[in-house]
Structures are given as C-alpha cells and as structure tokens.
Image 1 (spheres, helix red, strand yellow):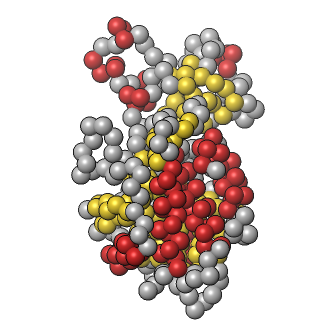
Image 2 (spheres, rainbow, N blue to C red; image 1 turned 30 degrees about the horizontal axis):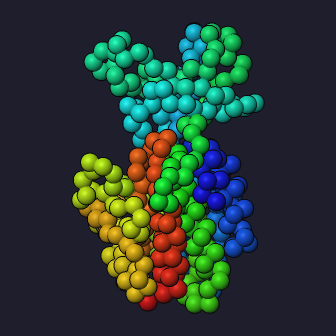
Image 3 (cartoon, rainbow, N blue to C red; image 1 turned 45 degrees about the vertical axis):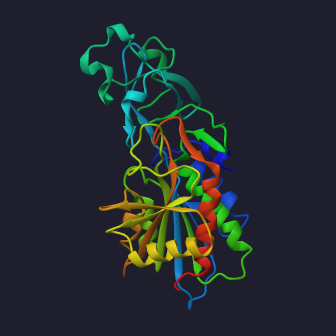
Length: 335
C-alpha cells in the first residue's frame, strides 16, 4: 500500500491522483470514503450521543512548478514547499504536462566552474534539462504551471526501512487506512471517527482548515512525520526510527488529549516517543484547532529521515505502531 501511494504524484494543489487512490483503499473499511475538492473524507459511526474524533493526514508532497522556459530549452522552476536546494543538482525529475510525462534532470554546472554562492542555487537559478535545445521545441509541450516531481522509485532497505519521495505524508495516510481497518473490526469504538486526507498542507493548510470548519470535531489528531534520528543529528531534536510514533506536546495542543494518547500507549504497551514543540507544530493540527467552538487537537508523528528530499526514510513498523495507538485511543475516546 505505502509503495503504491508513494509512486503517485501530488504536489500541493494537484492531489487528485493520490486522493482518488487513497479513497479507494480507505473504502474497503469505510464505505463512504470519497475524494472531493482536494481532500478525502470518510465517516465511521454517526451516533449523536458520542464524541467525534477527526483523524487527519495530508495527501500532498513538496515539488516544483514550471515558471518559465529559457531560449535554449531549459525549464525554470519554483519550489512548492520547503526544499533544500543543495540536494537538487543532478536529481532526476518528471514533468507532468497536459499530454504526457517528460523525464528530465536538474541541470548542474561542473564543480570547477562553481564560485561562492553559486554552489547553492536559488529558485531563479534552478533549471531542468529535458533534452531540448530551444524554446521553440518545447513551447507547445510544456506550460508555465506544470508540476515537476522527483522521479525516484520507492525502495526497500534493510531492517524494515523504506526510502521514497513523498513518504511525508503518504506514510501518515497509510497509517490511517490501517487504523480504519482495525476500527472496522472493533466492537469497542467509543466515538464517531472522521477520516480526512487533506490537501495543500505543505503550502497553506487549506484542506485541514476546511475540515476543521466543516466537521467541528470534539477531538482532532494530525498524523504527520517528524524529524528522524540520523548519523550526526542532535538526539534532543530528533525521534528514533522503529521506536514508535511521537506524541506531540505543545502550547497549541490540548494537554488533555496529549495525556490521553500517552496513557493509551502505556496501558496498551504500544511503543511511543514524546515530541515537545514549544510553539506551533508545523502540521495540520495548527489548523484543526481552529474549528468553530474549538477542537482539542493533538499530533501523532512518524519519524522520518531526509525530510522533503527524494530519499526520505521511515521504518515501516512505525506505521503499524501508529495505527495501533490511534485505534486504541478511539476505543477510549473521551474517557
């Protein structure tokens, strides 16, 4: 499932292919799952006497949009989302035009020609080489606004690790589909559950903001990724891969919800970590808290290395641990 999701392309605002596929996967367990207006929504339970829990993971990924074509046939592009330009030079990409998918690479100057700040290009210097040699050859094929993606296939690594672009946040989507499977078999569900796969998290948070106002849930949990520990990283700023999801504690999150998630993990012997964020969370939880009347919001995050790169890395077992935590919390929601 996760590999299939990561193979699909969905830069912010262009999530339809991912959303349609994710809705079909979710529909196995929640029959009314549907994609509309950039997001997927589905409802499990509709008892007015029970609290409502909204679970949200985002569909979109970072990428680029074509901003122009040079006279010698290269594409100018601008980043959609936070991208480290140092990693782009020489990377393979795919350009989604109206009629076809074109393969290309980010153009790179030979190292001995780079000087000073040229070593890290800004958006104005980013160029994609498709193999054309003039603007005339490409002008009728590629348009400004066409989306550009990392063209890297998902791969399995050792010790149940996986690398792929767009694991942020397709692993969260996969975790919620697995949560839906667990809850569809549960006889202990204590709440109505709304599943949301949101659009545009990487740019505006529009999908989560719309869901917050549309559903006004009692509780809302954003399931996203967080910085995973790698060689040379500061352990105080990163979470360990393979040791379970990180439960968020923040000034903008509900302490009661965070405590309930922690207690659920302890009671059910589910591995977990704690992520303290003194300010905002940088996830859809910041938007979900703005529901009319207020939603108690929380975060459950999957550790991920190399965020916003073509080679993001997760431990697949963390997806299962995340789903178990969310399902068990839903069975005690409001207690």
